[in-house]
Image (cartoon, rainbow, N blue to C red):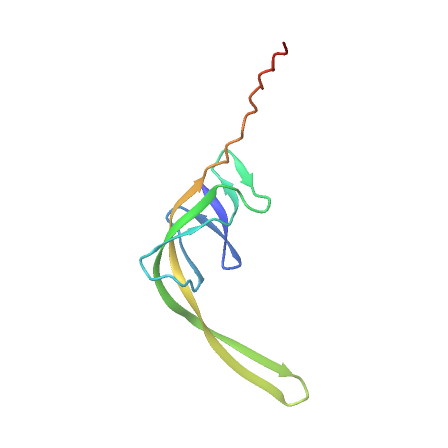
Length: 120
């Protein structure tokens, strides 16, 4: 079973047991997190696509650690003008381990027949 979930404005395809790097989350390492912004679920037999999200579906995981990624070089240049700028930064990230994907579908209400009123 897999799901596509929106975490911090980016979409990730996740399965149970996956470890993914996401933008830094304001949660301590070792804490559990739950994401309810699930866009698609697939259990091998049935694919459920949300409009825009799948109602009732959640993805839960554990924050394993926080860190900083490799350095990204930002280089700007305009030819024949003598303009060159070199900057760089390291992006912060959180490492998540996906614990469970819950795709419980919403229960549909069945209409009960109303009893007719007797007129005397």
